[in-house]
Image: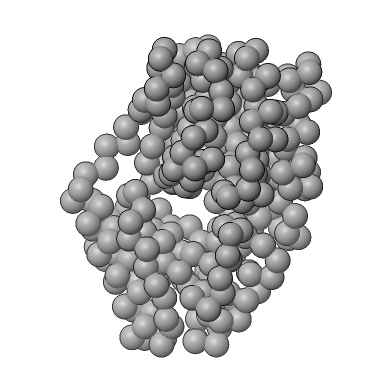
Length: 290
Ligand SMILES: [Mg+2]
């Protein structure tokens, strides 16, 4: 097995079953690697309070924390830990409040077009950092499992088609990108069959910031990095899952692994290993023993 100097990974559905599940097993697999100087970089759309209820730093020693980094909020936050073990920002994407308001305008415009033109109901979550989540499946609650599962892709396709969006998610993406152009905003649009997300950043921005601001200066090359997630699945024409955004021009020389269990087409550059969190935690344990 190849020995990696750094492991980037998604949190929900990759390291833990969901954000309310116990983190003990993930922590137990991570600690020996951090101890040995392997950099672990959590790249998640969520914010710090949703990683072990905001207590993740309490699970590691201060020396271990020196090798832990967090790329959170869909590109918005990049954290490391200082010599006292306090969480500190290591790269600021610099999105202005004016841009945030324009993202909110774009989300409302998308909601409005869907409602007026297609009679399609959506709900908007505005309180995300530098992006909005537009719920396109109001009637379908994910309860605690905030990741893609089962037949959601098909349900979304049917629901959109019933309202005249025959191309399903592809149509939705085109509509959202059109609104971005109309408003002169470089919108980065993603969709996971439950939420359409619109913002100016995504996981690519986290990965590029952490590579260029943290790992490259430390002498770690992209070839020495592994990238793990559970959502690389192709959801529509031209749209791969949220974890596929971890692959950028900078990170492409790394190795990519998908633990997702939903059948379907994945990008050719990712190795589909399946098995959900079990596979990923076993990988961490095996790395810790190398
Ligand atoms: Mg996930």
